[in-house]
Image 1 (tube, chains in turn cyan, brown):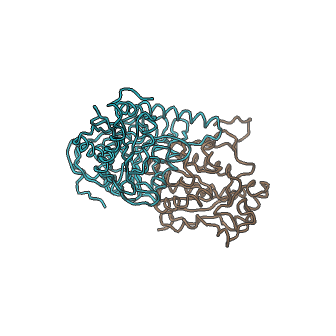
Image 2 (cartoon, each protein chain N blue to C red):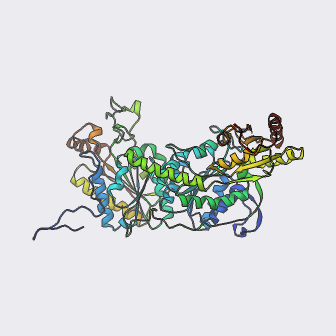
Length: 375
Length: 256
């Protein structure tokens, strides 16, 4: 149920307000110039849809509560194929239903922003917070082999800022973009300094506007001739490579002299931050490496940071998914431990500190921070 | 398009300007080409080419965008009405057309077509019903007639085993959001002429802002039915049209 008590007209750029994550993301999208929103109710993202139901008509912009997540994502596909700036949101089971259209949009190069307020799974699972859709978001989501940028906010304020960035990335690269939040970020309220931004509109040479004074355009993903489809896929791969080269984002905290590095994103990074403060108080030199783009994953930066540490601890609200990308980045040069809870449970700072202690003991023979990769 | 004529001759038949100059990939005798031509004629007659954004289905007719010269987006299987809804909502000035087969509209896309119609979206839906999955090799469709053989109903469709054919257009017609629903046929020239009138009216209904409009066109699939083109047209006229009866099913634009 919406907690909306703040009249949107009082939400001014630069003001500090208390806002719920789902509503903050919705308003940020509106201020970023979102032309249309399509959704379907599901916990724990329903307030995002409810905010849009009220606010989009106020702005004279389309809002449709679709018949299903399939309906919602395909409405987005249609609207975005005309060059409109479109937002869709859902939570894990609904995101699964959207995988088909996401693959079509990746193949057809249709920009759209999709928010996943992750809940615990598998199946209907539960409505508690989770990060168990990491594989789904970063490893393809739908069929056929493709990548989409995945942005992972760790605070409500960051989620608002990333909304504008997501639209900008989507349009710059003609690609769907994921915002991967979790139930805690969606449901929690926290003070945010409102930072609204409307990315500039790019001239479109591809959008469907009616063939008035120009040849007809077709937005499609089908290429039946293998030679044609391979050429198209090579074009997509070149785009993915460009995104991977240019759009990596991460944040480091207390990494100077950190012998133990926690890698965590989203809500898990919030827990890690508390754990690091406690660990440092007892003399464990820990720091935080927080990926903001989960794809492209900040592998090179993490490898550099890890090379200066004794060991790495990955903390996730899952049984361990991002830990695989961390291990790939570090290529066995440092021990990588994992601490996580699933099913809607959140690791406590105490559990994370315990894991840091175990990692510290296991790597105690390492003679201080290494400066080079060991064989 | 200009056509050179001999002195004294009169042009009575031309390729519609919106029909591209390509040979279609459709099998000999297939009805899709006829429906494409009718759409190109109607859009041209109404001057809608420059305003049209059309949605192509999955199935044989996915290539409609190669033959009808308007802007097109390719929808996932069955999702054309949802895709068209998105276009409609952000492009109020566009003329929005969907083209779907019976597997696309009556099986995998049942929810999308019913809800687009239920919302009364200002769309013109063309539903080509040939009672079979053509592109995948002739499997049973929701519209396959009882007794009809297909590669997935090799002994013929049985109600007790496969269920009954689904009369989609009649089902849609009961909803108040549907302003116009008609069923045409490509069985012979008079039927094709009437089908063109239905399509024209279904386009006008959208332009008038009256609501959702659908024209089902019963068509043939000679290869999928295991028949010659001529045999398939006879079956369409003598058998299929007895079950799926052509005519205007509802016209709420005439109601007070």
